[in-house]
Image (cartoon, rainbow, N blue to C red; front, side, top):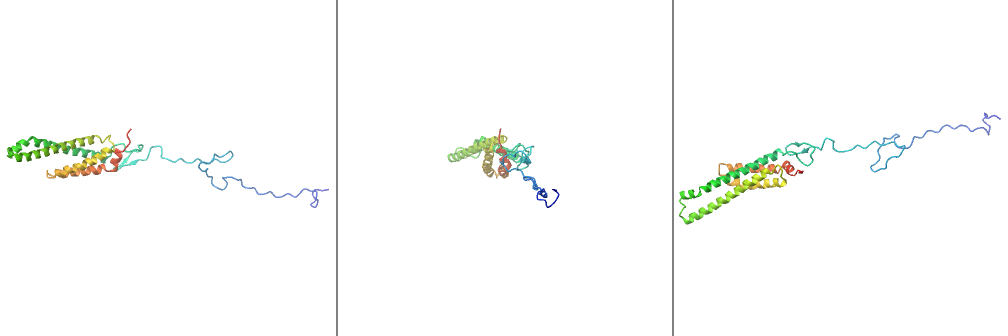
Length: 223
């Protein structure tokens, strides 16, 4: 019996052609690899590792710079400017000018009251009861204005010294202080234009204190 005969029923079966190879299952074949979604369990043994997720955040050299009303403040201090802005510094100087003006006004009232009796005698008011009564009223008004100017001068000095370490209340009080000082300027308009100058100083002080740079300076954290 020959195994080479094609009609032999006991011979080996004819060989089949090999089946085509199937592509391996799983990620990474024909598709770009993607990382696991957030919260997914770690990949097991035998699977390709996903690339690490990039970390987001600010660079290591510090926080971004904090913009102010008159320039850029250096980074690394997220709570506010490190130095007093120029606008705030000018407002501080103008508050000092307003306080100095009230000190000069108070001094002029002191000089005027020191010569009150002599002036009344030269005017011939001494001896007249009605005239003396009116003179006393005028003297009382002068004393009241003297006290008011003295108080304004002291308040301005206190505000001036609080600009470096004071809080937002210093800024608000400076705005109110300059607003009331405008009234003083109105009464001084007749004195060689000094009233108009004082009004202009008060208005500029109010504007500079209301700026964002000044607000950030007085609201900065203090350690």
